[in-house]
Image (cartoon, rainbow over all chains, first blue to last red):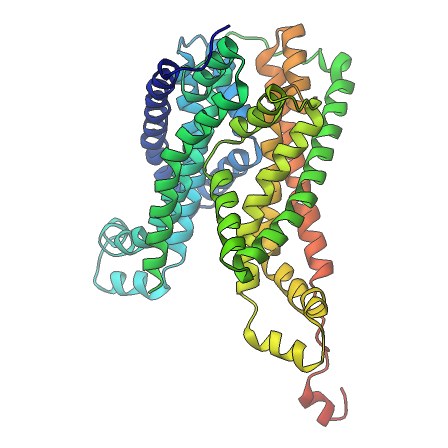
Length: 213
Length: 234
């Protein structure tokens, strides 16, 4: 048995890069999908709206861990050969799409109806209204909760350790198995997560405070 | 997709899933109630406390909200055991979920207490209520009503988060599902059933909490308006 050393710390920091990588990949893919979810939910077509609502109900009623299992085992069944990292990224992207989509939809809905009417009276098409009038205003409102959500996303990447992705939590488990100093190891792991998440939380709060002044 | 979905295993294993679902509900119930109590105390500390209480409250809330529940569960189950404080999986899971729920609901209650206007405190004082009476009869009921909707959302998130404590071998529904899939090798079907189970549980919980909210926080103000009294009490 050996003790927890600086080398282990470096190993954990190294693995934290994969936590960041998984977070960024899921954020980019999930963000793209979120636009789709948001548009489905805002759509005037009832069928699209029902599909959007169904997606959101599924995403918010099933735990991320179960989404991860479904993606991990489901992809394998359908004959697509993806790594644990790919399966985790897919599950976390879906999770991101649902929550970000809802945040963005509520930001757009929070705008006054007059904004749409004013844009329409300038003979703008629906797309133009969205791009030139609605989205620039909604972004300001959507930014603080979106950054707050990224914190949730970073924390949920820890679930990828369960299907074997070597990220921060998995690395922590490995060091723990070698040293048996569980308390110290997981305290350091927590601190590393905190170092990633806390600045984002503060940024989210600052932006929100600025919104209301 | 050339794959035959088979759900025959359900006839053999459904009781295990049901037992697991019971534990999931128990974990959710206890950690939501205990977590809310922590949330009320810490929320009050952060809203009204002195510098020391405010600082401790802030450290607790930020530490929990900026680290993953999975790591918190490892820290409590494995970490405390390595320091010599051994716990069974279910109590450890309950403790982890309660501490987690406490931090999130503290923020919700802080906002709730902040939403009570100064006039309410003054009115309570004017009725010669003590500080304790004023808190329990005037401030807390109104704060609870104001935060009920976000609190409901938080409780549903806790229900979903209970899946994570399967990783410290707490015997809830996800752990039951993992055991079943390792015995039947029907991983995808098992997790589909698990997903449906969570969907049903979360929708039921949401409806239940909305129902409680509707009954408990009905507008208690007199239904007769002043004008109708002057018109003969119609």
